[in-house]
Length: 317
Image (tube, rainbow, N blue to C red; front, side, top):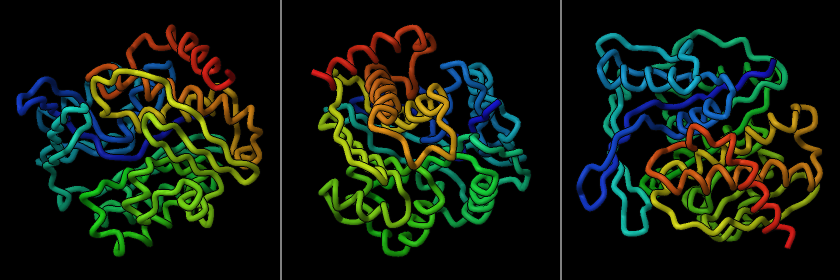
């Protein structure tokens, strides 16, 4: 049986609209993706750590409720769990203020039994944070050596852009450890100062063979060793864009699992095979934008075929 592992931060998102709190939910880039995969019937693992406080209890119980194993979710005694305030603007895009004590955190030494064709997803500032990075790289190299597929989302926000020169080496090492790099056009503008999709993909291809660049309603650009392709977005009225990119990542992993794509095949997929990976990714991301949750609805396995049918009709018209 193939396993799915997510490596990233776990925190509580408190969401504000017009400077008033309207909800709170477990969050974190990788966590959002893993929860959606749990809701699709997989049994993923989250490799992370939280405190032994009430917020930690909320996060842990939420993960268990959604089918995620907490075997590698470490509870640091005496530590507080991270908290994020997400402020929605007039377009329902979020700006964050995050409260956490990085100095009190360090990933556990225990290694999961990675195997060939497992899938590992990681990303965000967590992936370049010097506190976590040494152990994170050990995890990734162990997974890569065992033949797991690695998906990386840099999720590199504009408030980190002024540090990009000192973070460049870590970002590009992460690219080189991945089989698929998926990020937004804004992420790569912050990393490379580039806006042209082909130029961005060319930069990434020096480190990773497969890159996926999402540009919100403008669509998605895919570059592989064999071809490049542009895919349209679905037309929606977003309620919140929190978790859109994270769920695009979840949709990629769903597509890889559903189509039984193994590590040996990842660099030689056909245009048709990639279409069956991109389609659920677009569907997942579109669905999550239509609610205040960071993840797809619990019953989305029933609705996904309808959304996929709409998307295939769109790209084939």
